[in-house]
Structures are given as structure tokens and as C-alpha cells.
Image (cartoon, rainbow, N blue to C red; front, side, top):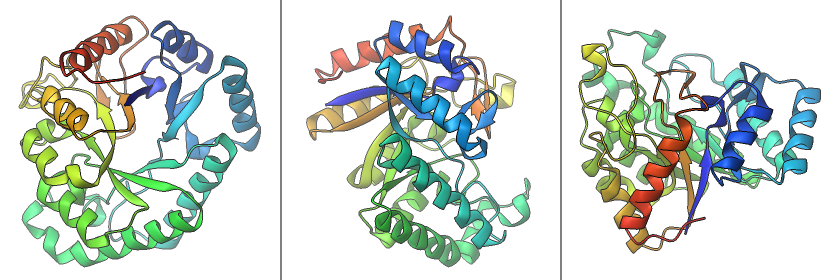
Length: 285
């Protein structure tokens, strides 16, 4: 069973508009990344309480905390960053959600000219940090979903599989994002096949390979790009997938801190994904 959710900040910075559009799309869950242009981990306790009250009143829940944990350089101090994960775990308990989206670190110094061939020198530290975070998550009763984001250690199918198989912890699973593989010029089908054994969360956006190099730095309607979303959906359905499929279309652009789709285009992306689900004979709500 696929349960639809959404990065609602792609719709609007206003949480009330976010919820209004999602309810019109018959989506009852949010992957909580930001409101009021502020990341979830930067919100005050009062803002958190206000948003929780709004969600409860509208009958909405969270699929996960869409945290930026792991989006720092691998040579950045670990303890301050670990404190951010602790805050995310606290928020899981506030909102009653067991999941946190995480990443596996940028290159040393966040160097934009870093050669991925040099990742092996930092691999052990990545694995160590991901293992520490998995243990902390387990103690907090939550699960971390690693997203295969562009430029982090785990941006390629092989390195994602390396993280998940080596750490080998039930509190660390994969969040599969087909568009991120396409953006990075990796094969999304290979990405799925090499990581599906650990995948427990899906992000739904599509991308044209090489589009950003041509100045088209935005996503496309699900099913119309090179993400081969139908392949992963069909296989996940056949494997009895039970989890969230989180809309993150990026139809008007995206970057390290999020994406933009807008309240007008978001419903089109949702309907396109529902068509993919229907054609895969997948059960969803």
C-alpha cells in the first residue's frame, strides 16, 4: 500500500495554503521540511506547537521530518550536527511520526570541484557517522531515511548500497528518489535495483537527464522524464510495498534547501503519479 504524502513547502510557505491544496488533492500527510521560509529544525517551540495544532484540527499527519541532517561537509564537526538530529527526534515525538529524512555528507569543505573518485578516502568516516546516527535513532524509536541527494557521498547507486548494507541497521533505510539519480546522470533503474532491499520510503519527482546543464533546472511531470518512475512503482507494488510515496515535483525549480512547484501545478503532478500507480495496479490512499 502506497500512502501519498508531500513536501508541502513546494506549494507555499504558508501552512494553511499548503494544507488547503493537499486536502483538495486528497493527500492527508506532509513531509515536514519548512513553513514560513524556515526549516523545520529552525522553528521555535511556539511555532511547532502552532503547526501541530493546525495539523490536528485539519486531520493531517506527518510522513516524516524532512530534515537537512547530513547536508554538511564530511570534515565539519560532528557533535553540533548530531545535536540537530536530536532535535529532529524530539520533533518526531511531538508530531507522532517515526521517520526522519537524512543525507550522507558533502565533500570536505563542501568543495564544488571535488572529484567523486576521491570519496573512498572519506568512506569510513561517512559509514561511522551514519552508524552513530542510526544507533541514536533506534534509541529514540525512530527510523532514518537516507535520500540519494546530488553531490553527497550517497548520490550513486553503489555508494547508497554501500552505506545501507554496511551500516546494516533497521533504523537506517533508504528513501529512493529517481529524479536525483537522473539529475546526477546515474541510471534510476540501476539505483532501484541495487538499493530496493533497504528502501522503505519513496520521493516522487522526475527529471530530464542533462536538463540542468542546458539551463532547465527544474523537474517534470512524473512519468515524463528519465526517472523511470513506473519501473520502481511496479516493482515496489509487486514486492508488497507498505510505506509513503512523497510528492516533491520541483516543477518550477529546486536546490539544496528545497523546491518550488506552486499551488497551481502541484495537483497535476499528483494526478500524474496516481495514473502511474493505477497502471501498476498498485493499491494506494
